[in-house]
Amino acid sequence: MTGSNRSGEVSIRDLSKSFSLGGRRLAVLRTLNLDIRSGECLVIVGASGSGKTTLLRILAGLEAADSGAVAIDGQPVHGVGAERAVIFQEPRLLPWLSVLGNVAFGLEVRGVPKSQAEERARFYVALVGLAEFADAFPSQLSGGMAQRVGIARALTIQPEILLLDEPLGALDAMTKIGMQEELARIWSEENVTMVMVTHDLEEAIYLADRVLILPKEKGGAARLIDIDLPRPRERSETRFVRYREELLREFGLH
Amino acid sequence: MTLQHIDRQIAVRRSGGETGFGADFLHLGGRTAVRFLSRYGVLVGFLALWQVASSVGWVNAAVLPPIDMIIAALWKGLAGGSLLGDIAISLQRAGIAFAAAVAVAIPLGLFMGQVRPVETALDPILQVFRQTSALALYPVFILLLGLGETSKIFVIFWATLFPLLLNTTSGVKEVDPKLLEMARVYGASRLTVFRRVVLPGAVPSIFVGLRLSATTALLLLIASEMIGANKGIGFQVMNAQYNFQIPLMFAAIVNLAGLGLIANQVLVTLQRRLCRWSNPAN
Image (cartoon, rainbow over all chains, first blue to last red; front, side, top):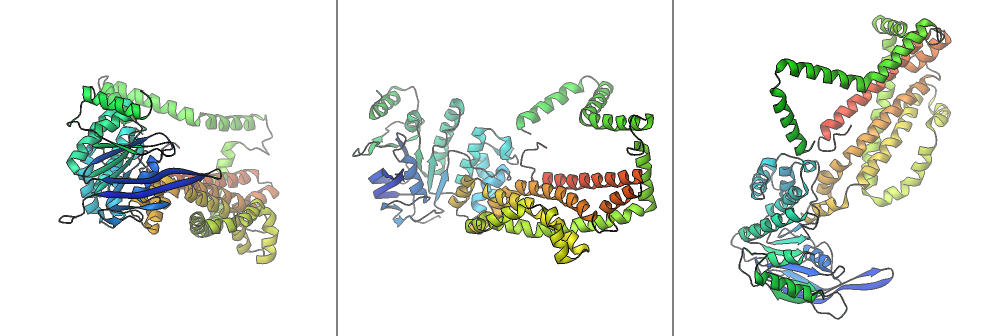
């Protein structure tokens, strides 16, 4: 990918999506317009049913929008693509493959020879701190370790855009904080555009360049908030806490 | 085994090292004995009770001969070669039928699990066939195929087909859709998804089918050999009973149990080999 002008820029134009639920149409995204900048970390928050996961799945190419368009580096998105990787809430590891095998999987299914795939996988296994566990099976890993394997698998294909669907949602509070720091480090080292869905406002402020708040009610508008804080961020800092209050207000909780 | 378990084992070994080799050895010996007894104690007790009951006369020794007489008859049959011919022909019948069932059921099951319309179309007739006892159909097979080897092998094949077919199909259908989606995100083709995700995911369920089928094969083997056969373990059981050679009858039954245990053990070993990743529960 060297020397190409592809850089992980996303443009979303007039995107709408609705589901039918018990015979009724339920709009989750209404003419959304958004530009995601190359290399930024955009975190999407919103109440349940606001369509944040749907938006991420459309960006991933796993679902099609009813109308509107998504383009990556100017190219319209149809289906999945090698420049995007998805990290799900569950690690989704293949239980019969070792850690290394799982991390190499994304390259292997695209036809990269096994030895070459495993060599690159080994690098990313080490990057997420699991070098000693390369030969372990998923059933031997803790939840946090398994999720790291999922992250390493996504990084191994060296995507321009990393899509994360509540990746830390199932972890306990302590592991979660450690993993947030890890994600911040990986994001800064890998020079990748990151789009992440979360329920956790603190997580959003800790990681995001911008936070996108999706409206729940009809007629509400999506809102973008710039998080203008130096990195690495300090959760107890006054300005951090102020952003938290601002976000809580957006949800009518403060 | 989890990593915590490994840690614990290492810790145990380390603390054991301080008590010295002799104590360790005794300890180990005692533990092995306890493990053996807790696993085989009831079986050993049952055999001992049989032996005593038969030799003391609590039960009619002509009907339930003592264990040592059965073993003697078994040894005579095996060493003299008279039982070997029966075992060979029985193994051949069950083996051909089982192999044919594997060759038909696994590919068909994989196909049915992958292609919904095929499964929908075939399911009703398969359910009807499955619920019809193979033994009830044996006379039909005899009419169609004659009273020779073919009808025997076919009735065993028929009965072993369904457990394997249904387990293979459900194994494919029950592969986690989240894993399929994950593979799709990484751009895997349909064939790659099948080869790398569906097939390995279905293996444990296929083995459940194989083990059920192996048991069924031996069951049907005996039943088919009790009708119109002049060789085979099932024939020997009936024949020995007619001639009132009761120890020989039990020897043939023991033979059969041995075959079942061996078949199961082979499959369990194979399963452990292929599914090291899944729970080492059994």
